[in-house]
Length: 70
Image (cartoon, rainbow, N blue to C red):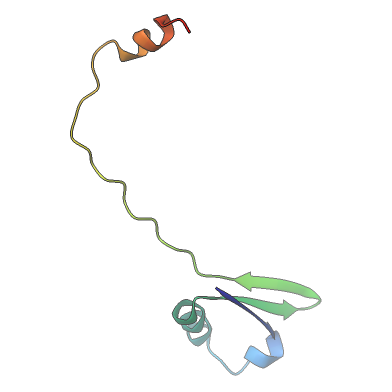
């Protein structure tokens, strides 16, 4: 991911939709300097859902863990 820094003045003529689309499409981190501070916008990747596995948990599994001696 690339990192880009802009000032609020440089982005005034762009719509919020344009700015966000640019961040998403280019997969970049955009830091906007505003009144001496910085606001950072970056895309967030969606996690894939966990797979559903076949199988079962046997009865008494929890007790068996605590009853085992090491």
